[in-house]
Image: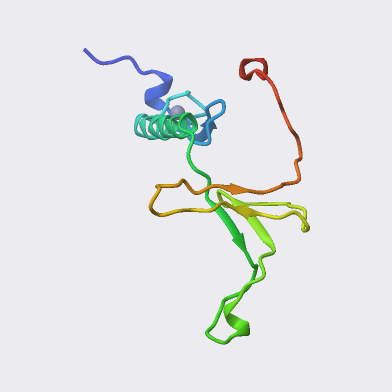
Length: 134
Ligand SMILES: [Zn+2]
């Protein structure tokens, strides 16, 4: 018995990427017959799950206090730096130039955690119950 021809069987598929809500990954869907690419969907779901895992786990910040556009060398003047940029997790941030950045004291024998205190300019400060935000 022959399978009835459907739009899906006949379609030459015009793939387009659609993004899931709040996801950075997207899924490939045919705009003509709405077929979803199965492999692409699985890849997208895996990426989405990975994002959710990352969002669920708070981690220590990667803090870079750097002098832009510089490389040090072995001369006295060339071996020291004057930091002029702060990055947290790779994001450049605006900080008041006259506010100190404190890298807290570390004792290798007492298992101290690495802590940094700095002052940043804020674009927006939100203090709220999380579920009130949506
Ligand atoms: Zn199609």
